[in-house]
Length: 181
Picture (spheres, rainbow, N blue to C red):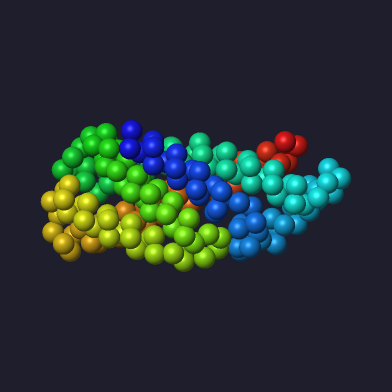
């Protein structure tokens, strides 16, 4: 219940502040993405701003759905690290629900405080790493050193999982635009 509640709040805050097409257009994919949006706008005889808004809507919708599956993907990382000690995936899935709840809470707060491209440079990555470090010490009984390097691995796993979710959402938004929706 905690995960669903926090994920819902995260969704409302983050999709309104971060996962918008203008942020992606400002990044390294900016030029080809802007060119594609301009092309779609010309095809439909409308403005690029309207296409941007439609794409942002599709992006938010796809991210909302994909984020709930991200926790399943992330649970693979602690399972790989601790499968000998705790062989059942469900144990690591429950741990991942807690990690994602904290991650969503942290990124949601950062989204409220720091919006736009500067959000990427926020301290939420470091805060999540420290949380993972302490969580591994408590749940798995790791030494400080082992917990630290495993926390770094899990933080990288969280980054990979979230990158995949955002990539899928962006692909879906572009796909929906090209389909004429």
